[in-house]
Amino acid sequence: MNQWSSGLFDCFNDCNICLYGYCCTPCLYGENAEKIDGSSCCSACCIWYLLGSVSLCCIAHMGKRQALRNRFGLPEDCNDCAATTFCIPCAVCQEARELKFRSAPTGGPVPVVVQPMGNNMYPSLGQPGMTYQGQPGMMYQGQPGMYQGQPGMNQGPY
Image (cartoon, rainbow, N blue to C red; front, side):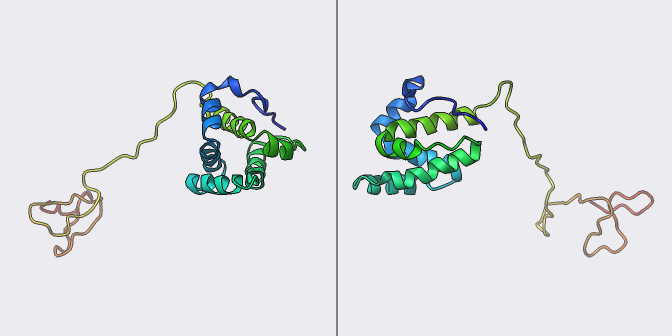
């Protein structure tokens, strides 16, 4: 089992998250929910805000905290209920720090994958002034026996 990267009351380890969580806890909760399981940030924020108006935001919060635990293999803790009920901003900030810690690159350059683009990926479909080089062995419509790119075969006018 993994351990939390920071404690419940280590809010000042990341002052940006601390201020954001203190000033707008529902917004930080929404961002966390989106990162945890792909929930809509806006919907999670609204649900949090509505449940928080009647002091029941812990209902939604406990589910997301459990999903975070499952995702990162964090140990079960009976203090989740108390943390999500009485230490709400601290718990949301702890989750945000954990998500930031677990998603940070582990050093070195980040690989970038680029899709190669070809100039002649699709046929011109008979547009004037356009030609299509095609793949070897491809037969062109309207020109029987004219093949492109095969040794020993007639080469088309393209």
